[in-house]
Image 1 (cartoon, rainbow, N blue to C red):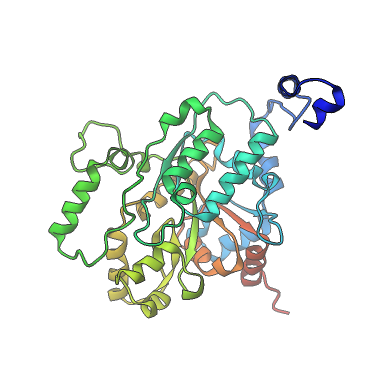
Image 2 (cartoon, helix red, strand yellow; image 1 turned 180 degrees about the horizontal axis):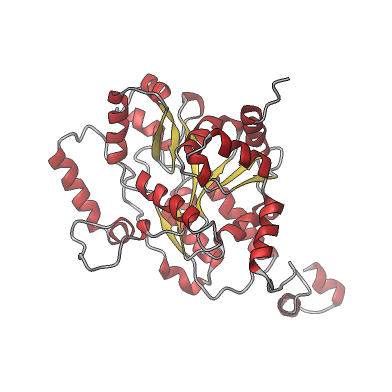
Length: 363
């Protein structure tokens, strides 16, 4: 409106001229084609990554740490605000993948909001390949919050609209309405199997995770062939526990005391046990994870393994773990130890906690 008044032209004419200026490259980020993609990728990795921290984490967790490709630090505001300029790394991480799994939660919703704003402010480079975003979590039983912003299915749809044209919205399957887990009080195997068969009838869930009625010669479930998984983590201790872990206590799957003793946290709803717990506790957590209706540990490992095996190329970024806040230190370290992380995206607070843990000066 201010521009139209200064130039004494109509608002539609201003909009037309701005669009033309963007196409001509006069506005927004510089548009160019990299002559040497490998050199460009190496430059981006150096710009975004904190290699000393990554190397220390690899050394600390020799087996699982070899999966870790990069550590990226987001510059969030003092109140944790995530601005559009902060999330440019996600364009790099997701823009060339063919399929991206998305979990659930407020943190991912905030990243999605910032990406949408970034898209308004700066044009995307032209892409010939569409990115299929795949929801990987069902809905909470009790504490769902606002499903229009936090739901895995909604986040997948919003990301598809950001990275693709609006005409490609049909690419996104939906598992809206499917509950995230089956409580252990449905203890009989026949009951659990019946519930799973019913969930398998939901077309979107069958497309993502498969079903017992799927044809043997049909395409594999989408969750088994993902190029990337975008997920956050939740902590297990009671003062700031994640939604899905909170609900496990609320429905009686596990006591509060056992949760704090046995569990490091969750990644996309998958419960991550502490190291060194008893066989009985390990079986209990495995049973809860078995009753999870969304992404499973084997999906995460398959995606992470494929990223490393393929040399961490842009088309297969692997598991992208977003963790904000020093209080997520414990679960992040455990996920790295288990080899579940390729791209670790953190804020300054968590960076400081990690450095204090793995790079502290003994003097």
